Image (tube, rainbow, N blue to C red):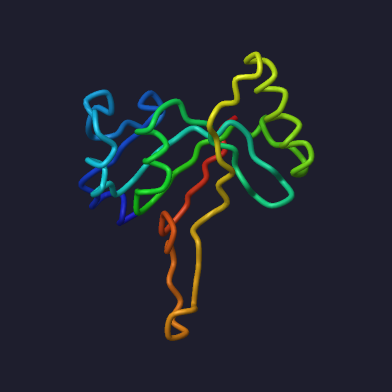
Length: 138
């Protein structure tokens, strides 16, 4: 992908799968990710009904990566696909219950936002990434 090969800032929470080009542990202020070209993150599971991917995050840096990057890559195991949102919410609840009621942060990501409200001109990524690439692993 030309956008990837020409990227200056690539962050990855799964460097053993796809490495980034800087160490996320050195980021102490999520605002410093303002120029992030690509975020590469692990999705926990995918919903077949609508293509949404549940992405939990542990800290503010990971949360920021989801929304501030120009391009987002999510990696999900093909064995972690649920049929519909009813199954997805049941799975999130079970995971939270397993953590003894301490709800964790996570979002369902389903692709870039689109709007054509302003002068009827289509804008991709008005509220987040411009592109979303999903890779299913064995």
